[in-house]
Image 1 (cartoon, rainbow, N blue to C red):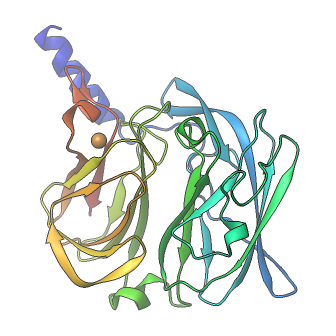
Image 2 (tube, rainbow, N blue to C red):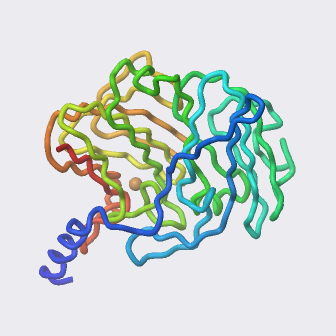
Length: 292
Ligand SMILES: [Cu+2]
């Protein structure tokens, strides 16, 4: 590749960021309340998903997006999640890290029959875990189904939200799912330059929920800052620690706090370089913390 092509490629990606694509994941899903139960409805669907401008992949998602919708519940809630299967293959859903009755664990032939195409299953549980960040994902043919996007966030939070958990007023809350399967290297189902920046005002306390639902480890590195790792796998750490690079293995979740004290556009990316940058510039697992 010529020097000119390299320069133009690098510049084009940055100039396009954040590029628009069809649909974003992590959208809030409001429950209905039925006899004291919070009822969420999720539908497993095969979708064509735009990971970056003009790049469409065969994906699978809850309610048609990668990641699926965000579910928010409170300690003590009675929660019902109805999962319908509109796909051409069976599925199940597992509540990753959430304490549930065994029959609600979502593992095919261990705790339930698969949800056949056209069928549904109702997952019911009472929230007994401490406030934190949890995940739901497919547990059937999961290399394909999770790899193609069947995962999403479930937050257990007090009425005052995560500000009450961490004793800081959280001005910006952001969630980042890492993925590396058939969708390519993605953050929340999008590859750079279609990844979404985290935007904060100077001095804001920024909470980032990180989860890896890919098949590879990803050391996530934030430029210009040190962040505080405050929770792991939904548990608030008794001894939070400072870092600038945090290894997130498949299945792990972390909460990190960033005090947005330095203005500017700060790259935030996986530090396995083949996941983020080539001769034509940045791609994949790159976004930015934008402090205004
Ligand atoms: Cu990576």
